[in-house]
Length: 276
Image 1 (cartoon, rainbow, N blue to C red):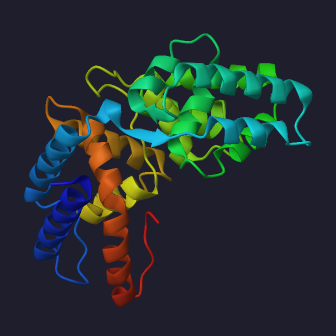
Image 2: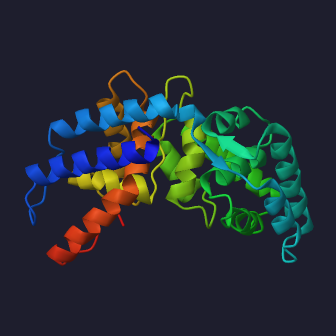
């Protein structure tokens, strides 16, 4: 079964189970007991086809280099630092693809700007506007300040998910770096790549909608620190001794289908999504 077919089958089964346990118009406070088992089984099947460390995205090195290079509003020091990071990342990556495993390796580098740029590049589609976002963020700070803030976020992610949240949202905040990408940086900085456990997890629109649909007491996992920590703890618990990031990857894959179905339900209820 191809990945798209696997995702479709898993999302259909999970949503059907959710709706069986939670009639239309009702509000579930906890996931039905079958949901964690179904999610774990989908994550296992997904990992058999795409091991989570091999989860890759396309990266257009030349597009990033050219885009950053033609930003006339960039300070010279910011442009130089970013172009150096693009060049170094390009030397480390083959075939224009970035994998989770490769981004984990970047955290060993002495320059946090390379790590930051790599995590951002992995998180954006090949022809997205990632280079613009990275350049805009970098241009708001001196290069030294940018490195210092990134180092503080990286260090906090190694402590705990809550420390990571506090660092990216206040203590070492970078304007323009919201939860979706700050949590990616924190995940790569703080989670054990060998076990997929022990640190922050990615929380973006897809994961937030999916976990909210299957366990509504986990809404606002990307906007509230307590719920974010509960989201991470829940996936650690559901994973048992396995990789929690495999469950996060499964939620990410399920998200678009869950969003489509749940938005239909919210229209019927006349509500708006708590995690949209």
